[in-house]
Image 1 (spheres, rainbow, N blue to C red):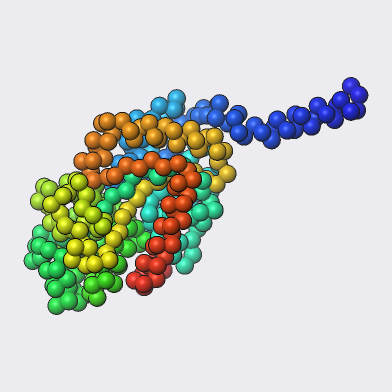
Image 2 (image 1 turned 90 degrees about the vertical axis):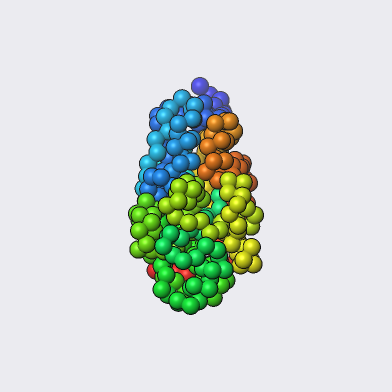
Length: 323
């Protein structure tokens, strides 16, 4: 082969190899099971969403849910951040792991933006301000009055430092000028028994977890944390109706490790849009108080940037720290 022809052929092959991550990845993807990391224990909203997707996904390979709780979700998120960027490891990120924790922790094991490829925003939900049944309050104004008369007497639980459940409580204290002790747990399933038993008295739990228990009468729901009342609980007022300016929405979104091929991200995004548009899935989300919104990767990136700015301000004003 003549030198000119040989060099031209090599150049063409090189160009093809550089282009391969575009179309070639998606054609053979997935060829093995996917792992969806949930950064909290089973039973909470991120776990519910991950398992709904795992049950309904039709990618030709199973989706395995892997719960890796701890450090306000940082352990599981860091595991995904450091995984190969091949589309086989995803994380059901939360408002904590991907917008709050960067401001709350002085040292983060990962960068909330640079170490991830956005895949899709999945759903959002209010937190529900709930109290133990033995606490003699039935409204937010009554709770505020009780806390002012008994500073630091009450404790509020959360499934970890930096979670929306934790920061909702810090925001409440800041806006009402009240004091109560934060008690972080390794997951909501450890906090709820103490709330029911009265060892802690207050919690700003995710609505999908707390609403069924409130309906059963095991705990008392005082208010929801979004600006407007959720259709899942139209009779429960918002905190803002008594505490102007209070608003805290928890959200859940899927991320892949940074560098994951864009066509693989697009394939997962398309399947998420299909799954979360299924009538039975929508009915399940509505019952739990989850509002679905399956975004594009670019929409998630813009949304996340705004959330990071918003929660950095809340953390600074509340004075909350994780370490």
